[in-house]
Length: 173
Image (tube, rainbow, N blue to C red; front, side, top):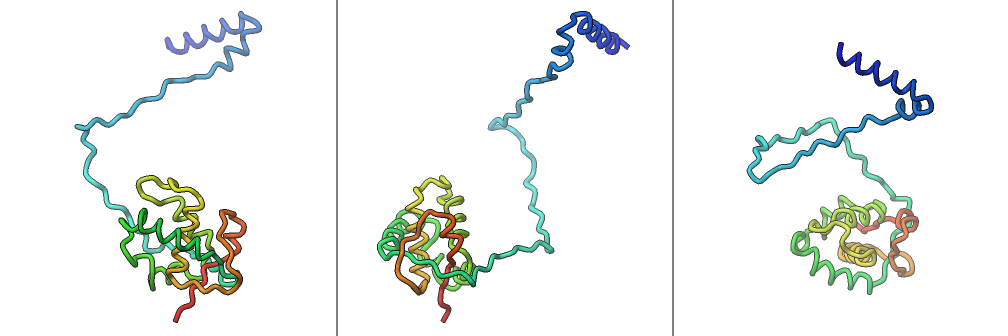
């Protein structure tokens, strides 16, 4: 009952104030946000296992109708150096080279590989490299996996249109 009486009094005051009635009616009901901070001694509960959905499907893009990507040998050489310095610690020698890489990435757009690497690597600072460095690493991976050079060598560019319109074309023996 008291809460109702308080609301009636407030509305009456707004109406009696004349021009201020609009301001009273539109005043936001804002509360300060609640804080939730974990301390080092906080009990967070038991770990919960992730639920796997056996019916989930992943759609892999197939870009087999697109022309093969081209890159410069100098780009791949810079990429090999970067790979040794930045990637090799987590991705051991040959981990991203060979049948597994070919199965996963052959006939997919170069843009898909570039975007994945750029948005997730290195783990300590995703997106921490410069665009040309990511392109050099992609060129190295293509060269190391025996990407066939079907046309004139051209450098990979950080142009999403050109990367979306070319594919990874690794000739499978």
